[in-house]
Length: 148
Image (cartoon, rainbow, N blue to C red; front, side, top):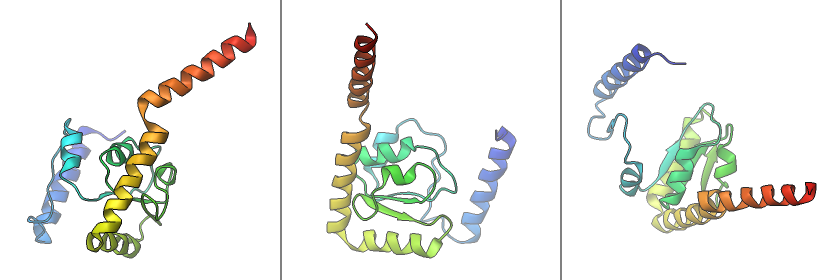
């Protein structure tokens, strides 16, 4: 588990690096937020370049916001991103591949829109809470009736 002082050190170093690379006009650090749906509405693309990841709630939220998804090929990310359908999957730590996918989506509005719609459709169909609760209830009912 990361200690609070480690998180603060990371944030300080990240801010220092942003200034050093003169990226202040391109990078916004929001800190901890609880208004994720509103923030996602302001985005055109959602990118998650993780080194390790379980199943990602943030990718689900971005999909529900109709954003095209880009994520590294680790953990549960490929379960949420169908490569070239609702976004792109790239090899972890391959910054050239990541940059290429970002460039493609930035330059191709039609592809970005189509992948965003696909992200919404796939997320809604496979990960919507209401649908998942109904599926789980059906499994419980089936099990209950099979033992009685």
